[in-house]
Image (cartoon, rainbow, N blue to C red; front, side, top):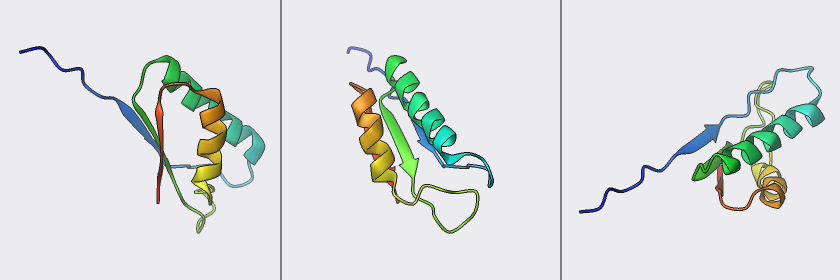
Length: 80
């Protein structure tokens, strides 16, 4: 029986500190997606949060759309 490869993924709960530049924070999130893609991770999950100051991604599908432009193999998932 052949050995099966273990799948790897990351769930990112968008914990962005209040008062930080959201443009830079989202850029870092996208850079993480690119890095995970290069490292052959299988999945990148993005949480949807909009009710607290720390959790600032109210529309994860938009972040995922931007990540899809920058990645080639990783599966991108919104977790709501």
